[in-house]
Length: 186
Length: 217
Image 1 (cartoon, rainbow over the protein chains, first blue to last red):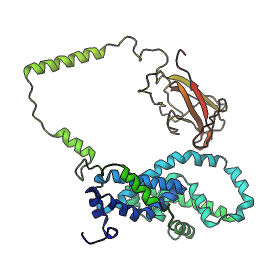
Image 2: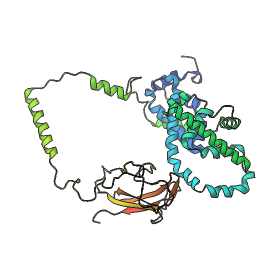
Image 3: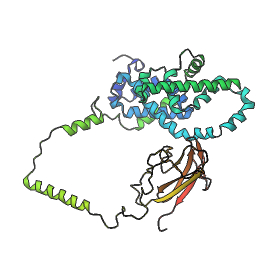
Image 4: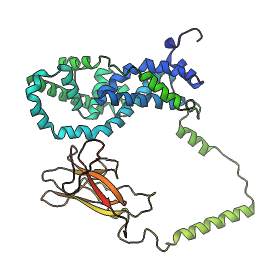
């Protein structure tokens, strides 16, 4: 497609150029997907630093394996699947940190009461509640309600069955609702 | 189910759909890593052909093999020799019963699964069985995690040893220094109250240290 600037080229053409040896074409793919997917990684991992690391890893792994991307027109979906897996790996490494927090949950809640009025607000409550969901529930909730994927798409990405995903989303919603209502009462 | 008209959930989702800001150098960092790969993406297989499919095609592709009678006899003799040698138990074999077999302590855990600590197949040093004990009345399950099982909560479950809340497991460990902790009910991380605490925990969680001496040391 001569004449078109890189940013306007479809994914399949950019992938073809990268495979032909034009590494710079990959920068266009990075710019195209980084913001959209950073949002998922940040919410999934609860930390911008961890999210950037997972997203970088996903881009690099996708580059290495680009020849195995069977459908270059759907490079974005393929990259997202890699990112979801990277977030799972990163999340498993962080599990111990989060669980230590849970151990001291009572003390944290007690200490937080006098300062509740000074909390940054709704957004902070959401982040806290999201961090207290089980990882598979958080993943399902974000894919369904934030990334707005269908259950079939979610199943393709996560490898879980549709009914299991529906149950995870339901439980995530119930838990979020309970946690946020509790926070509003404080 | 979680309906879309649930106002609170919709507010949460709306908030989370806002864009997040990345490090301005993010693209440059990714591209530096990509360029550091040193060569282009690996294109070792035709598109659409998975590794498994390629292996399967290689296996089922017919081939013509020519073997002379002399070579056939030599192969048959070699196979016979391998079978005879394989049936003899070598003297001093590491499988001889010396009480320190690497899987000597494998046993069903509290959920009926077999605890199978990883054998150190590349480590010639013999593993020593180490018994871990935790008193945790009221616990529903207790796991042992450590650098010997990649801190995997599901890998090594303790068994309830008495009605008094004692949990125990025996695990073969290679000589050296190992960090470990107990996980109660899948959520509470506890250092071993009867062992020295690790001072260099990477994650800020409580953990303990056990040092296994070389046998005969």
